[in-house]
Structure formats: C-alpha cells, structure tokens
Length: 95
Image (cartoon, rainbow, N blue to C red; front, side):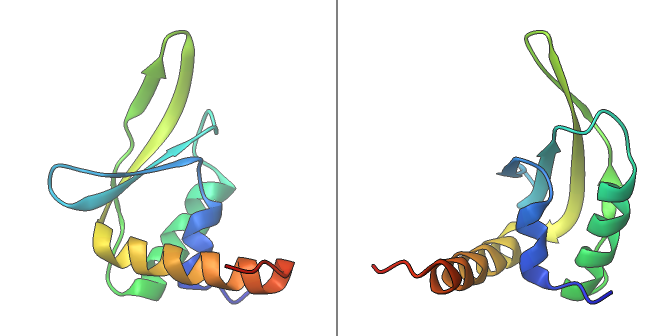
C-alpha cells in the first residue's frame, strides 16, 4: 500500500496546532486501531515523525481519541493545501 502525505487529512475530524507547534488530530474512533496504524505510516512519509501521546478528548458527553504527533504543524498545512488542490481538481471545482 502506498500512502501519501496528503492522506493525513483523511485521519480524524479536527487538526489542531499544539502549544509546541506540532499537530494534534482528534478522531471519532473510541480506541486505537487501523486509523492509528495508517497515521503512523503516513507520518513516516514526512520523515522521522510519530505519535507521541494519545489523549482522550471530552466534549460534554462525547469522548474522542486524540493523537499528538511531533510533526510540525506547518508541514501538515502544506499537505493540507496539496490535498485541497487535488480534491478540487478531481471534483472539477473552480476558484
């Protein structure tokens, strides 16, 4: 399986810059599983990056799993920009 940097945008539902300037992903998953395996491998596409913490995020009665990575947030933003560009091209969007 070939993973791309842009695939990081398909993990979780919210992407946050931490106080340290790294990426935190919030996921609807209740426990680690295939999403974590994919994330670990996508991070390697950027270089020697990994998940460093797994916080539980609580919003009222909803609980989500978080992934705090050591990936600099600006690298995530570049991948996000590429993801949006490719999505728009594929879907036929015009600016």
